[in-house]
Length: 459
Image 1: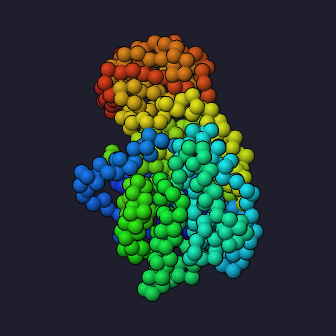
Image 2: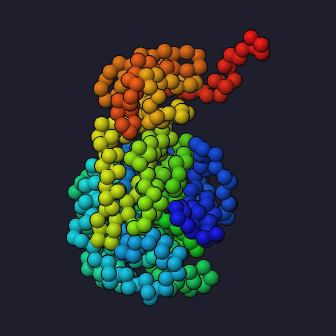
């Protein structure tokens, strides 16, 4: 098996021989049936944590849980080539040949300002940019290699420009960093040569230290792909210790072989067990980096549904753009995020600061929640009546969220019906019904199956 169009990082790691649990630690449980994933000897296990550690994590992550929606940015030499971010590996491009792209990489000035402005308009509260992807090229200024933006085609620090742009638009700042490195001479050799491992780990820790030191306060460190070492080989405990010493308020993910602060399901929405933070990272087409031939674009309606579904499960949605080599955003991405932004501008309060919803079963709607208020997010509008089966909590009132128009409620043992609605959806791509309940909204769909009265045969 090899990476193919639409392959996720999870599948790519399986292809490389790394178990899926390494990337998605956190005892994940899915809203949909999932095939069993290979086990990994290096899969991180959550240790017993003291109340103080838990409280400290809650403090650091309070803003993140409220934010719900972020922008992922994959940008590097592969953006110049335009064949997919895995092109160097998939096409077997020799290092010396691929390096020539570094001289051709000449993005327009202040490209990141357009990204940050689009993120604000789309309602994305934070951004995460690739500082170094698997190709090994550093988008930042470093003393440890000449294979970096200031010393190659760009002639300047692209990460610094991104940080400035994000802060100017009031977005939180995240750094993506790939541990895997196809360019460094010790990037693969470190698996079998101890001297090479020590050199490469020192290099890796050094790059991370520069990122944590040179750009002011950083909100997120998003590791990726710990091939070919495990947490012990990467000295991940030591690395994270250094990160938190330099950035005490930072949030760190789970892809350096340790559990981290949050899990990272990829190209799927998969809620973790209650109490474990999670974030689904997904693309708008099938590629993370710019791929000029990839036209499999998701609709804005699908993207809004994904925002809702992540919030429903108490998670976050990290949605990717893949800028071109010049830094411009593909028009298809701009169009979709602009439409998502129009919806978020009106409905954002039904997403931000919401809590995990126990009500989660419907073929026409998703659900978000704040306390006893349930937001029924209807994406497949059925007409004058919207029904939710198995809703056990007493409904006291309902209204259309954006207009405040009263919605009539008919509550029965097996269902709640919201009636007198327009035949056509009042809003696109998703219409929200705000429902007030006498307690935290609860649903039991099993009771519908088991307790529904059956008529006897022959009646």
